[in-house]
Length: 461
Ligand code: HEC
Ligand code: HEC
Image (cartoon, rainbow, N blue to C red; front, side):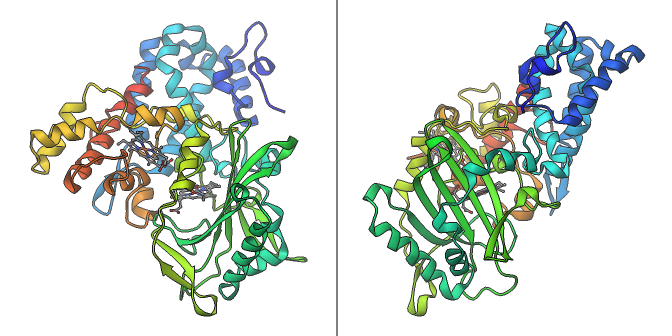
């Protein structure tokens, strides 16, 4: 059951749904109710005026995003963001009713409340996915959507995809099935080496991606399923890759569902266990990186099969048709995920500090006014992305994750810009693209000053 504002409204008053949306956790509700009782004991924040709230909020923003040094670079620390947001939300919770009753306070605090609630959820181990329900609860709600198509969860497929000697056989099972399908219903299979992060079980960059279109989901819904199996790259030693990740796009309802699994030996052979039910889930908030439900397929190395079924590098094929699905899907809702709480898109249509930021970054790289103009013309990412997937926090900022876990120490947005893939059709030079990323990132959030597009939004501007 989902809580609505009405259900936990205090007598004579309801709490706006946006603060509680698909249900504050039981803990949050408890806090809220104690808050109501504590109001008799007068918590100081219950008496704060709008400007006192604004002052407290600004201090919290500086504290939440306080950078730390990682390999000589100042970056934002994800775990610290979650922990401090949870603390801020703790202070806010008993006062949400008071804020809501004061339109000035609400204007100052609305975005900040949404942000700290969403980010703070990940401070709890049972909410690694950053949702407004526990990971285990999410699993029970979405399991019918995120199940693998029967072929992929069959013991014979799982056995083949779990042994490098039989990867060829796993792909052959899909190819055999394709023979009986009309062309537009055929599945796509791609063995590749990823360029960004290791698999969920941290064993490999190897992937076997399977795109299974038009799978029948619950209530006869048409679902595209994107399934990626962790596989060993040629010659890879060490622990056996075991994770499997799924993104399901329900095309009629325009919803996206996510789940990671690990393969393990069961009584019937290899079985799948959702990470959402594990006491120590290795999974992370999918929306951190999957701003559109599906991240474009941009392999580091693509594989075909050589003698004896071994993986061998082959010429990349671009995957234009596959990546075009992202735009076709349009804007998708992610159930239990308050996407708007992650702030505005990188590169909004205008920003007061834009030209100053670009000039400063361009000067540091020795670029002149011509370059500044070209870069400024490429800054408007939101004109496209707002329509299907705003690229919001944390993608525009450098965090410890890029330094720790990203293969080249760079995030997805930075890579798409520096490689020249975004914005589409740009003709910027290598140096100009680097300045474009630096300018966009600094415009979004400048760690040295805590200013930027994100901060303005958090302050309700
Ligand atoms: C740290 C960033 C990051 C996080 C967090 C993340 N992913 Fe991904 N994911 C990627 C990237 C990047 C790709 C594209 C393939 C590649 O280069 O690895 C990808 C690809 C995928 C794919 C293949 C289809 C596609 O989108 O290209 C699936 C399925 C997937 N992820 C599922 C998940 C699920 C489920 C979660 C959350 C439980 C998740 N991912 C969390 C970065 C991430
Ligand atoms: C003309 C429209 C357009 C503009 C402008 C644009 N993009 Fe994109 N972007 C797309 C489309 C469409 C995709 C989906 C993938 C594809 O088509 O290859 C995409 C995908 C992406 C992705 C991968 C998707 C994801 O969820 O991670 C990133 C990152 C990205 N764009 C960054 C940017 C940045 C940064 C800018 C501004 C400098 C920008 N884009 C400007 C259309 C645009």
